[in-house]
Image (tube, rainbow, N blue to C red):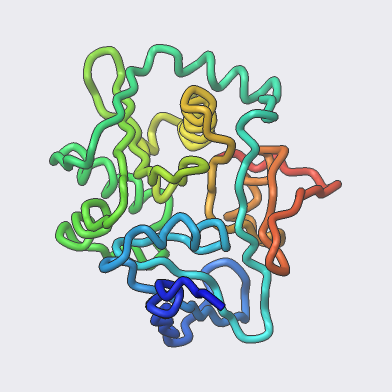
Length: 249
């Protein structure tokens, strides 16, 4: 029988398991991840993303926590999404912002904005101790197509940025930061709304938003963006929840 010998030369994934650490989302839990370095084979990224992995720098990872599967990969159906009345109001409130999408090019404004955001919103988190070089590596070290989406006021002031991966089936919001003083704009929500709109413009069906944890206050905002799917038991499946999700981002 003739065989395609190329199949026998596929390089197996080199999986690595992280050390256990305190879970940032649920109390009295530990976090552990399985990770793959895609630097030598960036083409693996999209397939791994469809299997629930997330990217940070040249690594893609997935939770592999002992006796816990609370982290659910989450993606929004961009074509079927309909904003709520509150979301429509947030969209209108930010119509004056100028958006630019470009290959990664960091400026001093980016680091200043990030530092203000992280110390105001997440001063107790691991990223609060991030140095300028570590921030630069997080943003610029990407082996796949990645964009910085920037939002400026009419007078040219940077108020929000989101690091965004481009996949063959959608966009992935890797990390966003914004002016913590612009509370009336609800910039976190607006960024997601804008990325959903960008997916529609590009004909991409999905916006990937990382992991959702049902009992985590930090993650509840994601459930406001539906219809959505979660990755569970090896399949993407529709998510539904009867609870109320009024948390603002």
